[in-house]
Image 1 (tube, rainbow, N blue to C red):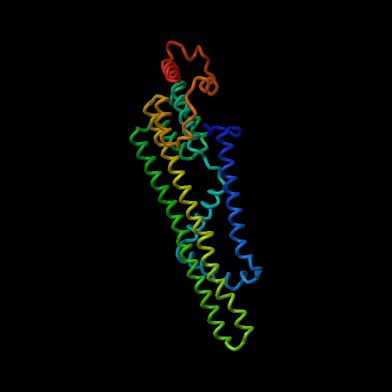
Image 2: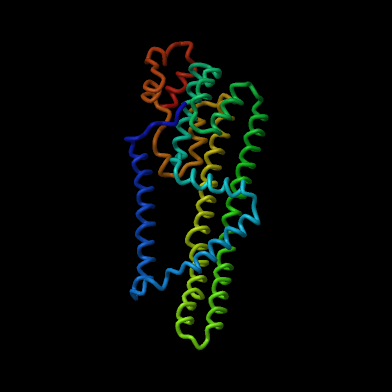
Length: 303
């Protein structure tokens, strides 16, 4: 089962607007930040190839000494996917799980096998696989909890790499400043040498602080935020799949999973007769057949 397609939904438009607003905020405040450098019009003073090479070369050399190349490749891949992949909202996961609960009631638990192949979230696909394969509820909880814990550990390792690089950068900026000062002292008495080496001494420190606090530090914070968000989604899936396996009523499942959501996302009523008709193509006669106890319960709960 694919996540709900809400390209024209107000909630989806709000998410797109929030992402756009975040991008606009980054551009505006970055422009404001850069304007401070250009205020006195001596723009050329802030560009120094020697200081840049010392900071970048030294920082990444230290990173390769500290971590394996495979680890640094994983950091790059995590960063790339975190910025390129669409963020899945918690209410989408809740709606998907309620749909699965309804489907298991109308068509049986084995009907979730087709959703296992179509699920767009890897963790959800894995959880459905355990459910369809007939594992015990306690085993499923144990498997998924272990997966969540090690997922967080892996992401924390990626975050640690970025924070380590952020801590290294200012040190190499200081090294560049020392190199510039040594060159300046060697050229005492020669004004041209002093004027050429002063920018190296000053801009190296600037580059080190800038890379640490404007690039690598924010990258680490971004990974931490995405990790917390994905762990939240995984916990919602864990509780939802366990509830489906326990044959919890869809209305009770909805109320349970909505506790994970913010108050603004709890307003929509996910389990409703109209939505059941459209989603599962169930007629009123099917809903109220004497043998359809689950449908009657849904009907009374929706009122």
